[in-house]
Image (cartoon, rainbow, N blue to C red; front, side, top):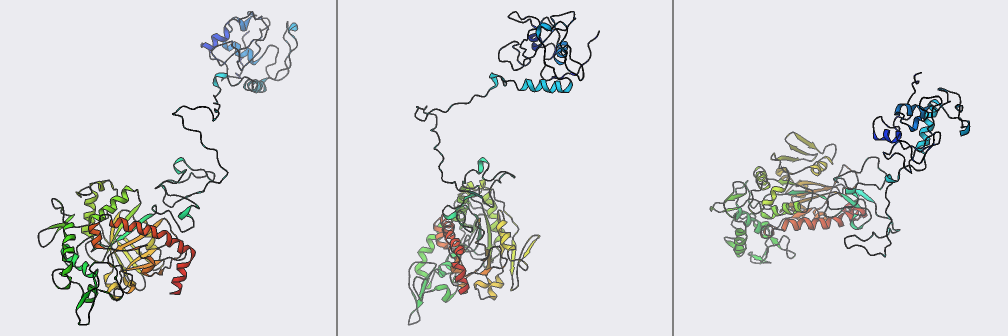
Length: 558
């Protein structure tokens, strides 16, 4: 009579035919096991009968079979599987098990479940064996050694115990290089975000200058540098056709101070140039007599001729002239077109890993050539700054325009067009988001119509409630007198406001406004770097005063 087909109940546990495990199952028992005695069968380990196996089954001979010793004398895996599923005397579906004939001496067996309940019961019994998992699969758990035991020299000391002081909370900056994982529980950041470091945009709340809503981390803000050209980073004026020799003379006339005597002759009150008046009542030579291209060649300014010659020698171009980085004057000599101190500023900011952008702001027409010179320098063609080739800053060669009127300020560059008619923050957001190096030509006629005062100057927007951005304007015509200055600063005093207030120059002098000393910029390569660092140091105090409301009260009183 053929064996009935049965559903295999444990296909992932029972051995496959022909393998090592089959031979282990069909091997004769050791230790004189008798037919009908329970034996331990390992169906997972190739070692066969071995202590610590996790599965135990009773294998009984079939009554009346040709091989009464079936399980011990080479029963195949299919027949063994069938015997494990359906012990002799158990009905195929439903009912309870009955002891097989001839097994009275073995004792009565407890009724066994059949069908799917049998499969589920046997599988659960196998998985819940007390010896699971096997000993060789248990993980090794090292026991920490006492702190007093000597340690090898290469082993680091144990970490100090956690203190009860709560750790500072981490806040993510606006422009950090990573974001916290969506849905992560509070306080859990990736390894790269676990602690603030220069450049990752993290700030520690409640620590020093970083506390407060408007204060940020000094030295880590994004810098937006608005830079003038003539007599600031370019010692020349292409509009009037002036070279370095004439440009130096004009600057010296603005930085030397004196007064008219009783006889009407000019008398110097200081023999050293300075940006501010050295004493009350002093007037610059420029304010009294106007521009003088030959200031040091004759007349009262001849006493400064040696100073003029010294700085002119510092401007000479070393080696072979460059078509874009050098320029030639009327005497056949070649000079730096852009001051080396400006390239030194770019190199230092790049080495410090700073995030910055350069926006040239000029009334003149030197923008196209200046942008071409910057592109050549960033290509590594400057003999004194070859490392600038590593500075990955795009140069936008298309200059833009800024037109001002009583109603609005309009910005145009290529297909871009922005206006402050509906929202005064549009241009602030635009300048704050610019990348690389570009330039804009400001509205000179509007400045002249406003008698060269601050009201008609180059507009600059500042938001002290945005601590991640620092706008700095560098120009040689910035002065503390609002009636004679070139920049029109506008500050958003209220958080999220779209209507800025006009701020006096004295409020932002050496904070967001830098008056260029051309002589120092020529003689000291770190000049612009020092100016930027001084503004960053003063900006922290400015934000603190704005947060306390002291500056707002002063502006309301004025």
